[in-house]
Length: 345
Image 1: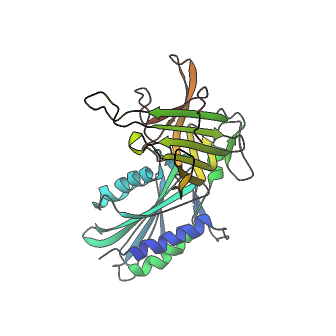
Image 2: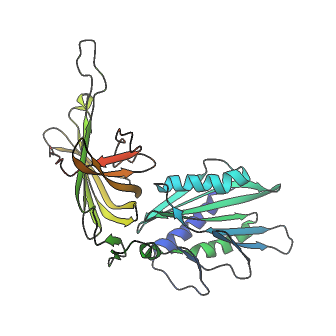
C-alpha cells in the first residue's frame, strides 16, 4: 500500500484551516492538556497515561483507524527537533518506519505545525502513519493517526479540522507576575529580557606561507526585546576578503513569549539587504521565518564582569549564526548589554 502525498496534503490543509483561521464552535469538544478537539462520533475512547486514543474498526474487521492525542511536553528547542523526537518515539520504534519522512510545515500565531507520514506495517497488515507535531511557547504536542483504509481519511480529516491549541493554558502556568497582553502573547511584568542584547563574532580561515590572511569576516547582531512582547533583530555580516565588496544587512521584527526558562521568538518579517562597500543595494531578499524556542538564563561572567543573556537551542539558526564557544553553555548564543555594535550602514 503506497502512501500518497495527497493524504498528507489533505490533512495538512485541515491543520492550516483549523489552527490559523478564525475558529467556529464545534459540538461535544474534549480537551487534553493544551489540545482541544472533537472526537469522532461512535469511536471507542481509551484513556492512557498522558494520552487518549480513539479507535474504529469497520464491519468487515479489515479496515481500522486509531487516533492518539498526546499531552504536551517541553519543547527540545526547535519544531523540527520536536518532530524528529516524536517521529522516532511514536512511529520509527514501534512500527520500524523510515527515519526521514516527507513533511509539510506551516507557522502562524506562535505555533508551528509539522505533518509527516509513511507506509508502515501493523501486525503484518500494511497501513499508514500520519504524525502531526505542534510546537510553540516552549511546548510541543503530538497527534498520531494509524489506519489502513483510505475511506477513513474523511473522518480523520474532520477530526483534524476540529483541533485547537490553547496557549492561554500555558500562560496560566507561569509564575506570579506574568500576564497575557491584548494579542494573547505571554508578557511578564518583571521581564528581565527587556532591553538590547548584542554580540559579534569574527575569524580568519587561514594564512598563506608568508603569513598573509587568506580570508576573514565578521557577524554582528543585536536583539531588542520590548516590554509589549515585540522584538527587533538587526545583523550585519561581512563575508571576508574573498567577497570584500559584499555586506549583508538583516532586519527582523516579531513577537516573543516567555514560559518559565523557555523564550520563544516568533518572527513576522525578516529581510536581508546586500550592499556593496559604497552602500549601493545589490539585492534584497526575504528570509525564512524561524520560530525558535530557546532555553534562556542570565549568567554573570566574572572575567567579563558582566551579566549576559545565554540562549540555548538544539541546532544553529540562520538568524543567530554559529554557536558561541563556551564549555559551560554548549549549543548557545551569548549576548551582552555593554557591547554596542557599530554598523557600517
